[in-house]
Amino acid sequence: MPPGILTLAADKVTLSPANTGFMLICSALVMVMTPGLAFFYGGMVRVKSVLNMLMMSFISLGIVTVLWVLYGFGLAFGTDKGGLIGWEGDFAGLSGIGVTELWGETNIPIYVFAVFQLMFAIITPALISGALADRVKFTAWALFIALWATVVYFPVAHWVWGDGGWLFDMGVIDFAGGTAVHINAGAAALGAILVVGKRIGFKKDPMRPHSLPLVMLGAGLLWFGWFGFNAGSWLGNDDGIGAVAFVNTQVATAAAMLGWLTYEKVRHGSFTTLGAASGAVAGLVAITPACGSVSPLGAIAVGIIAGVLCAMAVGLKYKLGYDDSLDVVGVHLVGGVVGSLLIGLFATGGVQSDAKGLFYGGGLEQLGKQAVGVAAVLVYSLVVSFVLAKVIDLLMGFRVSEDEEISGVDQAAHAETAYDFTGAGGGTVARTAAVPATGAATAEPAGKQGTTKKVDA
Amino acid sequence: MKLITAVIKPHRLDEVKEALQAFGVHGLTVTEASGYGRQRGHTEVYRGAEYTVDLVPKVRIEVLVEDADADNLVDVVVKAARTGKIGDGKVWSVPVEEAVRVRTGERGPDAL
Image (cartoon, rainbow over all chains, first blue to last red; front, side, top):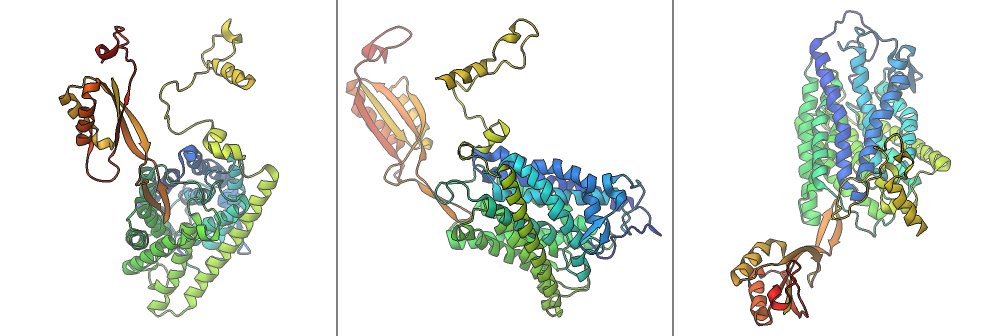
């Protein structure tokens, strides 16, 4: 977010139709990242839990949207209270906002800013879900999202982007969410899996991705939507910085894909599809905080470094023995930390802010600020997420039963399966829907009869 | 009568079918199968994690023939299915006591 403009001062500014239109489109682009993420993750899990994986992202669109309207926007972007949290009565329920009221000096309506930021609030908890694939109760996950958004995301968004937020005031640069989104979600993933534990069969059973085309589809949608995420984060101001962010997003993502693939070829012998998709996402993550403050050449460096380091990091779970199913820690936490810290080296100064990185004559000051931002968000999110997961585990149990995990969360939680593989004799239709009002209404549905007989036998 | 069973690479199915038709075989049964021989499948890599895939896709062809044709037919199948590379498959024959054409009730060689 651009520094110094997040205030409700509507003097001397007029609504910009261009910026407003641009920001509404960017909001829609960021929205599509969440279903994109769902497919990216969904393709990586086994057939028996792909629907659950899709739903773990999709449900965030439901839960976080409602919370955001009720109090999330107020907590994140309301008037600052001690640098730690915001509040604004008019933001509760979005009830006191006029359609022509503008967000500070940005020339866009407050409604537009609120909906753009809403999309960030939605995807961040959805990112965590990849770490918990295949093994958690859907109700527990839904509760986790609601609590996590309230206690972790809304305050951290205020720290990083809110006017008066303590990291914002310190001068920590996070253009579009390296700290508030990716480090935040990655650390939460680590906290949650420390409570939830490993999948049954981790390191023993094959857990191959069931559909790499879905992974590529999801990665492509993420890449596409990310232009709204990054270029939109300058809120459509008329100074070209949004364009810098757009270019750097493309450049770093391309470089990270090449970095990951090269590492893979050298280390494992093949250029894999999953590596290309993962490298691209790692690049997107790493450039997110930095895309407003580095040059395109700097973006290449950020991309390559993130691509290689994240490719190395995803192997750590096997060595350290924790089961981060789809490498949320390896890609989002590590990628976010890399991108945030590299600002301290590659920031050119004079673009998003005057702060220069070490390689551009700025000394170590900005690197130090970035490190504080990284550490603060990492530790807060890790600790609070661990506690939240523990509380949910004690209240209702976070995991599904062993039987349900083995047969698949799709059937247990959603009463569905993703694909119909049946040949002959693929099941019976229960006559529940079309029973006539009289006469046959007392007849037992065919499906139930079948089930009862089985149990008796 | 003999039952010839061939487990071959899926992409050789068309060649084997054509060779069988040229030989004069009127019918056959094809099943999708999976398995491995001495080569033990292959290795796949996902984000650096290696998985050994033991069972590789094959097709299984079954043909009923008269005793006198059995040896020649096995040769025809082997020739058509061969690529010379590892995993080409196996062909074997076993004696069959009886065969019946369901539509007419004909038995033995008349049913083929």
